[in-house]
Image 1 (cartoon, one colour):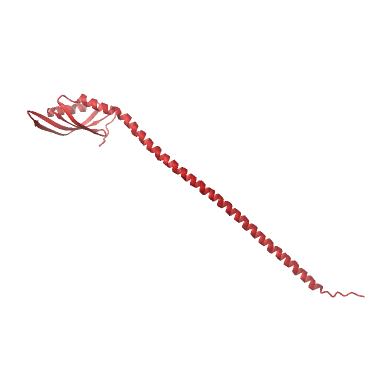
Image 2: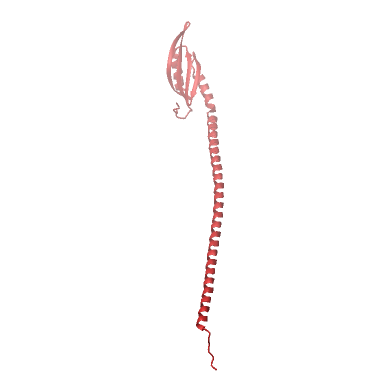
Length: 188
């Protein structure tokens, strides 16, 4: 007897293909989701790694800014100390100058001339005094002009006043203190 296949083989084959397609589609969806999840995880890790690097850089920058501020403070302190040292050095260098000024004034002061006050501003010196006559003031100016430590005498005023039986000349003279071998500076 001949056998007849009553099963719809085409229908079974189509169902098998649909089932295979569904499995493949499900596998592709799962694989796609896995790839997307892995990509998101990788990007998330890269972002967190970059954020940690950024945080470290921010903290390092803050430390460097503190160091820069400390260095700036030290630089300002260094400049102040250098300025103080320069002032002290100038004072040390000018220490003997006042001695020379007084010594030279005493040496150049003619007889009959008396000083009442003296004021120094920079290298310019103002002397006030009383002389027995105006010629003695002239002698004082000549001696100042010939001095090694004093120069440029200028008379501001000479007033002759009667004091009892004698006449006296009150005077104001400006001069400049100088160092031998150094040009005279204008300090006003």
